[in-house]
Length: 135
Image (cartoon, rainbow, N blue to C red):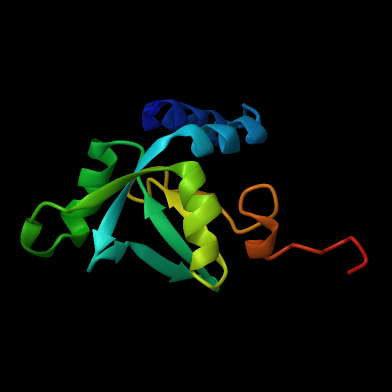
């Protein structure tokens, strides 16, 4: 069963307010259906700080705010509806470079970033894999 990103948006708001459990936020991201714009057949992403960020949105309104600035000529933007778990477990590792998930980058409060670290992405794709374990 697909879950709406609105629950995730609520968890993000909690974290911005300094409350809520970060593990619950990650869990909700994994269970949520996110809208990912398509860019020339692939998923829309941006590079910043040495990380490729897959951009996703919690609902059509958040995606529409993004599309206002990024869709050529104000056209509608095609997107894929994907579970957050699929993005971080399958898509991020397949990119072959440090990659994470940026949610709702067009909101006033800014994006919520899920970086490429253990506990968010698979260990093989985590930039901190092996740190602190003597490896």
